[in-house]
Image (cartoon, rainbow, N blue to C red; front, side):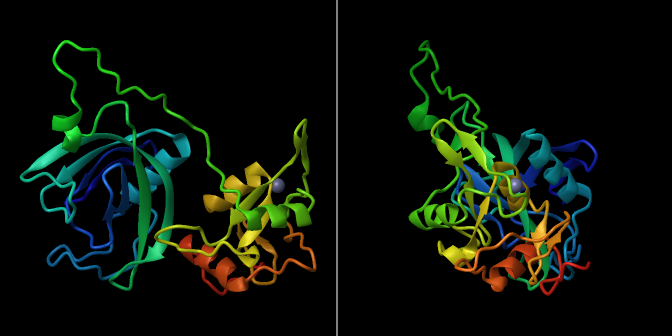
Length: 263
Ligand SMILES: [Zn+2]
């Protein structure tokens, strides 16, 4: 079954996670969901790369617009959060990020990181967390749009070296508390990317260019030309960028890993 319902124009309204893909990573409140396409309808095996079209494009639209998607889990899903039988509606999830990666099959798949909207308790916790009848339900938490920007000691070092100046546009944001910039990890930290927190994996960027970079809005070629927007990365002699991480970033957004600034 096609697991994504919706259109590339308007976004996805619901998805079904039912174990069609070996690359799904389910942690209940979050779900790394594999897009559709490229599999043999008979065997279900991945036989080609997935493309950012149809349902995959629809989920990407949700990420851009901030619209949530209904998530249904099926009992076939290889996960402790799968229902014991049939299908279960598990609430609304936001598409926080998406990327391209080589799946276990060896073919490229699109992955979508979904975060559950926690205005209601998850169904798998219902028995523990439902209050006695007649009490006011207090599972309220305002939907937040705050981006959490990691600021490690290494990121601070990089930002200070660049004097809080964006390596893409040269902007230096001043505020009463001092200048503001963000340390952008080129190969992201955490699963499934497992990029290192080292200076050669961090760029000093303004918030706009950090967001664009994280969402694949532009890339950096091995020669440090920018791909997708004009210009060249601004550099400091004492801060070398590892081209292997730039290649990783391009590859995850479907660009050839050996791209130059000329494409
Ligand atoms: Zn900038």
